[in-house]
Length: 180
Image: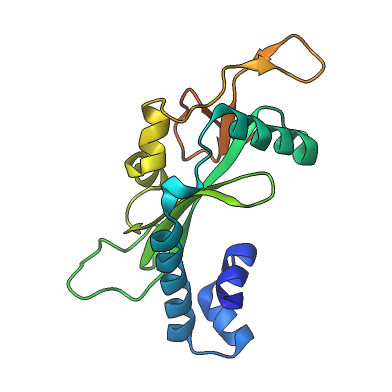
């Protein structure tokens, strides 16, 4: 597990982590891929999602307290997990970074706890394409997340919608915005 969490937390390449932890490169790849699969199969995206407006407000309160970012209900990003090219797959797993990968798409709260996880799409797909195909992405698109209505910014009467932050790869939608 320490290899997996080091990979997520530090963003180092798997070969450098394999060297650091003195394990084989293929072992490091296997650890990350298997851990992602187990997490996805065990807890699944629907288990993690906040189920009502109050839970989203609590997440937003934590973003405000910890990061001085009001009305934010999650941070969204994708991570390419390096893999060895599966047999007979052509370039499906070959990504723009010039290696073979699967995509981990996740959202987290202000304390870096996952609130949505999707793992396993082809590395050749863009983050925005993967996001749009996930259960979470569909829920955002169909407005079924129970996100609270706009509320005043702290200390003002200015109404502000709740939103997710993500990088420029994600298209603007009603409930998400680029990193400020």
